[in-house]
Amino acid sequence: MKGQNWHKFPLLFSLYIAQSIPMSFFSTVVPVIMRQENYSLESIGLLQLVKLPWILKFLWAPVIDSKTHNSRQLRRWIIVSEIFYAIVIFGIGWLDLGTSFQLIVILMVIAFTASATQDIATDAFAILILKKNERSLGNSMQSGGSFVGSLMGTGVLLIAYYYFGWQVLLWLLASFVLFALIPLPFYHRKNPVEKPEVKTITPAAIKGFFARKGMHKRVLLLVFYYSGIIGTLAMLKPYMVDLGYTVKEIGFMSGIFGTSIAAAMAFVGGFIQKKIGRRKALYLFASINLITALWFVAISHGTPALAALYLGIGLLWGGYGLSTVVIYTTSMDMVRPGHEGTDFTVQIVITHLSGLIFAVVSGKIGDLLGYTGLFTIEAAFCAIALLTVFYVLNKNQHYAST
Image 1 (cartoon, rainbow, N blue to C red):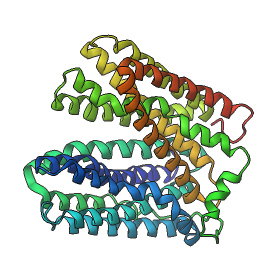
Image 2: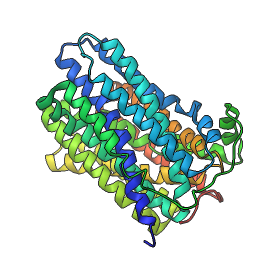
Image 3: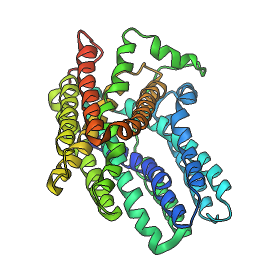
């Protein structure tokens, strides 16, 4: 890689780790800690409110687009948002989970509003600094960083809590967020990448994304591409519980092995996509998801062997890692100049919302039809996703071949 181009990839990797570790910690580890402290399920359920800013972040993405005109200004937004994020996390460390629960939830929502803002700015920053032929590898850094952050947030930090306790753990978490920012101030360009000025800060900016020709096809792809694997991912742990695996075994097999595979395949997926192009990658990765779903249908007839289950987990998380790379890359390709933060955020929020719906529906299907019936339906969704790719890419010039 020529010149200083390679610097941008570890920079993006660091930024995406910084935002994913606290999110995975607060959404998965804190509920475990709360349950150990005998909190009610209702209180634990309230903790899901911390995810709201990441669902609603598209509402203020146009503001960031209108207030930033080049990569240097976006860099400032990232730094300020992340410092504020770390300060709030550090402050939460001074509070007692038993006596200040409601205040902690409020502060967590504030913290994740800052984190969501940082995410908008980081995505726009990545779109500006990455050339079109670099986006495959750039999104490997994004996806891989997110999976590595999740692995650390759900595994390493839970162990750290056991040894150091709540306060020290939160301080370590805040320190790591700041540490991950270190490469950013040193990323200098003599001439920052400029972007067209956008004056509007209203929801009309969001409406403009959907108003473009052919965007209804893009929305269909975003809704259905993950549909056949999200439901299986949501039901994987209950399935393993019913197979008789312990919490410790499930934590390793899905949380550590599975997430590690996802991170590895996110890196590999960027190179595959760069080699064969976006269009072929969309077909290939959707086909892998269909094979994965069919594998789970096959092993659900009876009790699967340990090796067969490990293979299924590897295929499932690997397919998710691959799919994330191609969706992120093509989402970058679809943004309007000057609306980088808004357009990318809108697309990713669509995948989050559709994923949430498919996850909820999968639980109801599982109750009605059992696991074999559920995995069969998920395979059908994978087939629909593959057909959607054919429909969307047919005579569609929006999708780059490289």
